[in-house]
Image 1 (cartoon, rainbow over the protein chains, first blue to last red):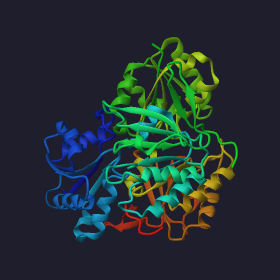
Image 2 (cartoon, helix red, strand yellow):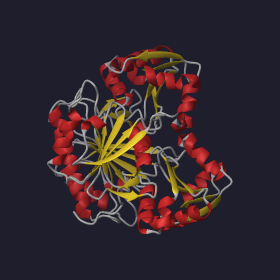
Image 3 (cartoon, each protein chain N blue to C red):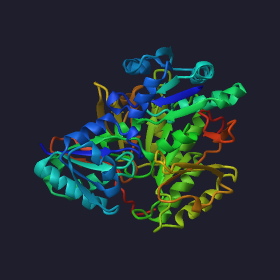
Image 4 (tube, each protein chain N blue to C red):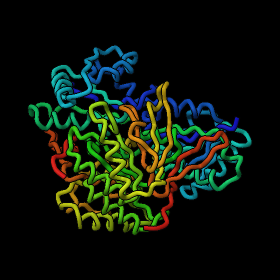
Length: 251
Length: 251
């Protein structure tokens, strides 16, 4: 049977890997993915790992489709959820542009906990109202599109979660994004940086749009920009919870 | 110890309940939640269930905070992820407006798979690019805010996922939302209805903005509106995958 699983392995800790994902990993013989993600799940099955660099996701999807067509029992893995800036979209791009036989592959996508949900759980309830999830990488879309979307999100008073906020190859985009948002949102807008969530070096920082700096983020940082109503609840230990109320009073 | 867990139990099937959530449910003695959600997780622990109606979430959060302050070992549960239109925001609202001692309660939020991730996994990869998650309920925000956000989302060319799209008490809002979006988005825009995802009566329907009707949704339907680039990949069985490519070519 030419089954291909596309599995979201969650944000880091295996405590957030779903039973469905674990069962799928136990049922396959070949797993394709980015090396560090494969290392995480290697103890969970008896499969052969096919590691590739973080990079050409469509090429990786083609390898997995070809393998699934030939022998079945194949999985393609993503960090977080495979549908959110993960391998699922790359898979259908490979399917759409590949041999007709690939469209008959029995694809089963297993959802996972995407990074923003884990980050939000540590911060409090910043996603308590309507929100936007967007990638700040301009590898696959022009900066003009990113800027248009940031402006639309700010005008709609959405909470904004930024994936791929900053990397060595793209050091300046987050600063540009903050500058873009500063033209619309008030300086006291809450901003949060959630680093390496669910991993041993997890770290949270709260700031505001006036004070935040792009240097506070690296490749494994989820950046959240609050809506106008997003605020803090002070705790006796000097820290604070960040939350967005469910009610909105005016347009 | 006055610990209070806020647990996302996933979209339906316990195959998507995380190990962390299962462990937390094994550690508590009292669980507060909406009755049908409690029924789902009752077999997983030896706790006393405190069921309440779907309704006053802040009152339920107050009960849980008071119980946690007095005896600890308490959990508050949500379907999906507690941070996405779930109990987490209601909890901080109760904490903000309640006795000072509640701010010292040791709150631990356990993330979960929210409905849109499960729905997207069944449809293909509709969230393959930037997207908006919003609730269509005007119980807590005026319709003018909802309309402003729909327009901003459409102008930003985001994929749009609608929670609380339709209920018996709010039969007309989804039709109004479709009409609002039709003023901006082309008629061929993809629309998907994902009913009761991961439950035995799961059902998917693909449509377009020109053809879709609000009556296709009920209380347990996740409605997805595609971006301009969202499209179908036909399968040999006559069905189709829905996906949004990772690349965007123009602003």
